Amino acid sequence: MRFLEADQYQPEALKLFRTVSADIRACLPRARIEHIGASSVPGAVSKGDLDIFVGVRADEVEKAIGLLHGLGFREKTGTLRTESLCMLETAKYGSDVAIQVVVNGSRFEMFLVFRDRLRSDPGLLQRYNELKLDSIGLDEDSYRARKSAFIEKVLLSAAN
Image 1 (cartoon, one colour):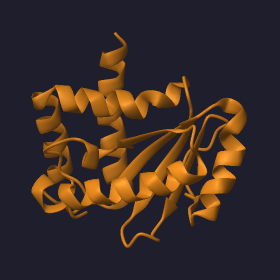
Image 2: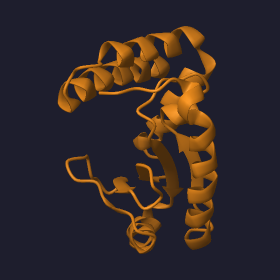
Image 3: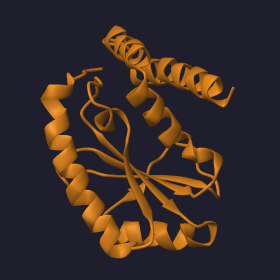
């Protein structure tokens, strides 16, 4: 695992978000497109990748996925896939870009809830950054398990 401080990647991530979201908007004009993940949170440590939330109606999911395939995105293997969530990825933009296609109003809007919690709570963000920095040297699976446990705890506290 290698992580970057916010000033090392966030300005470029924001430019890339604007580019990719414009491409998505061109083929999905009614979608809700939001910047998520660490690159969307000022001061967050990150691997430097970009995550984008694309919210659509339940009856538009498969069509949206097909249109995003046309932009060069492919389904991300080894991730959760349901009727309300599909994760896509591409390296087309010269950087790792992932899209979470989510049914609006579904439980998978948790991506937005987690982002907003990190943005509004500096102490929480600090703990998240520390978790990432403490994960240097771990393999990908171990890092993901630690990160998932942290996110689940945050989401549980947000629901209460």
